[in-house]
Image (cartoon, rainbow, N blue to C red; front, side, top):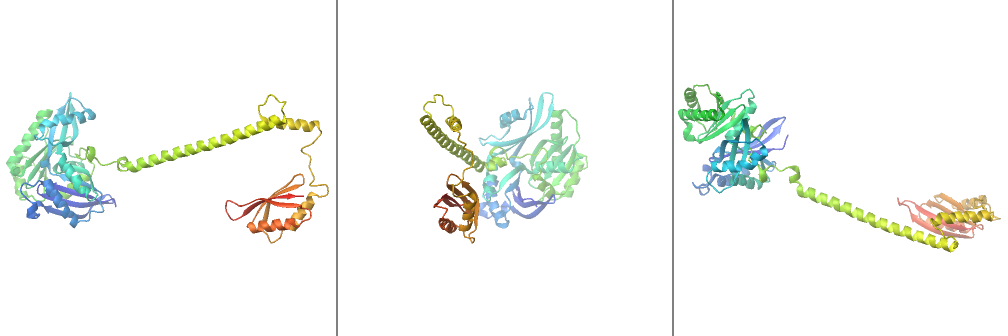
Length: 470
């Protein structure tokens, strides 16, 4: 099951909150809460209190009756009373240019106020040199209220959209065979009309509940269609679609009178819950006021500080590694220069007549071989340990003088001019001392010394090295 989200339907009468989730591709209602502002305590419901202030109080009541800890996102349906729709024409089609120019174009069409607005738009059509655009604007203070209040519970709105308009877009998605419709959303206090041409919402009108009269509503529909025909030059017939809100009454009588007034059969949509829940879907031509700083945060923006800290730490680590490597290289080069200088000094002291020196080590090696050749000496000739001591005798003595109970492993045995260099490993340091004591009892071995003894890398063996004089 996908992570749940909160669906809020907010108008001037109250709000409805539904905790939604998705399971097997279907939307599931986990819990719901519906509040009317008139039912709030009297001190909190003065006539001049704004619906956004009442929203703040009502959401506290919702949080008391619903567990909001499981959701982190929300979809907010805004009453179209707070949204201003305009269809305008511009002499260019570039989305970037429209984004820059649109605030100045729609500002004279909005209520006279210094309050900033957030807007969204859709490109409808391009006729000749004119691009038709549907715009929707809402006061930024309203959007700020939703983000501020829901943020108290760690919830971030990902969609804020007009309720009636959202119903029209959801209806289009569910009825792909329809192309030109006049979609009405009727409640006791509000009427929304969305005129759709070629599956694109072209015009949106919001009317008070006093226009509920069938004759008046038919006149509004005729007026809206006439305006559309004048702007586009197209003579289109629109199929009326009506969705009644929960508080709508006398539906049958109104529907009969309205069909008589428009002279057309009217299709009624009963599934108001389904249309409301579909507002979360990313349908075509959806209006979403989560723009700019209110835009749904991307992964990069959400985790910017953590990613930035990780990147800085990575480069600091790389920098320290490079500095450490440079220092190690500098120390190594210093040792090499020291050895080169020492080799040069030994060479010049040994062969003072040698004027041209390119590689002291190789030149000294060549000179020594030349001298040995002149003196008939053979450096590679096998040497005996001593005239009276044979190699096999030395090996036998080593074997006899080592206690059989000691776990010892010999890794190197080197004979060189009356000296044995013996390397190996054993269990512990005490065993090294026992081996040394046993070898010192030999008459062949004149002197036994421990050159080194240390634990190996694994820590379970002791490596040793003996120097034995014969």
